[in-house]
Length: 423
Image 1 (cartoon, one colour):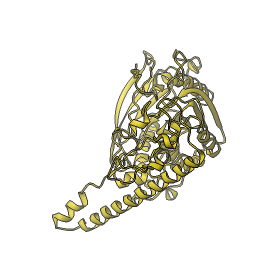
Image 2: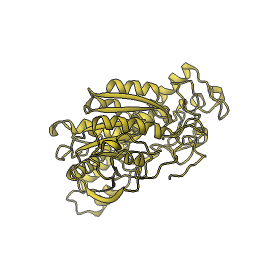
Image 3: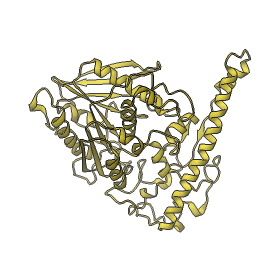
Image 4: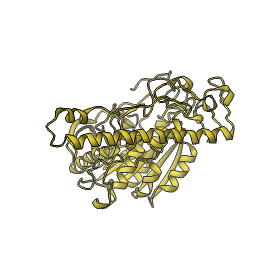
């Protein structure tokens, strides 16, 4: 059972069921097409013919709350880490697609009849990007990363999964950060610098006492969002400068006998981005309203966590910023990739989501390319917590929808296990 942490308003930690007693778990280390090592856990129950894959570009999903739910429904479950798990300093999404591909090849080799991806939160955009690229002819795939380095996708085998499930998928790290970044920062080297006219946590701009829903005027919201994009563009320019500087240093070091050239090519170039927990919707619940609680993905007091160490995109290489965190440069964008997801698809909305809002769900449903598309909504918060005390968790409600959808399209060997809950 995962622990419950009442300090997190987002409900990041929620109770999980026990896996069936007959579950067999094995650990595997795989090699990607470009030689990186990635690891995963394969959990199998007797008679499983379909395997569900869970993965996230930057988090460990080994003990995801849906794992026992899926096993109890007669499905095998593959949970895999990327090469950047729990350390996204150098997270380049094009490399992570090669990590996904290693897992997909492994599962095909194991003989499963059906392989289905399940992307939760940032895993949704990762798998949407993978489906899009896997569905293209090798020569049509992305050739380089946004920083200009070879992507290696054309030369890699990218097996296409048989189905796709998206649970509370946010729109992509870049699109997410564009909503979260604090545009009132006036000096990127000073974490306390602030333009009071753009300060989201200033009562003069509509911020209410913490815990009470704020009320921002439409003119402020529009000005704020323009300023967020302007700050992203400024950081993009700096990232381009550093990426170009690194590329020039690598060129000088090629064949050079001067150790200074080799050292210059190895010098870390890292972006530090202050204050990235400032989505107005975290504290103004009237904006794109749903059943979400007050607060952000990081807790009940975004006016404080905004200045803390933890946050999206806080520390990254220029390559990682451009590939992952820049809304202008990244290709890992759900709406951009969704038309390429053509296999049977289930999209599950959590009605109290703090990262995937109702407008996002409508846009995602309209963009997905699957002819067989099912959209469902269940009560729950982004990480699968319950909205109200005493209610079923969002994860258990989503699992019932996912289990039924999978049973209809990818039956288990034993029909008696299909759709059976774990509670």
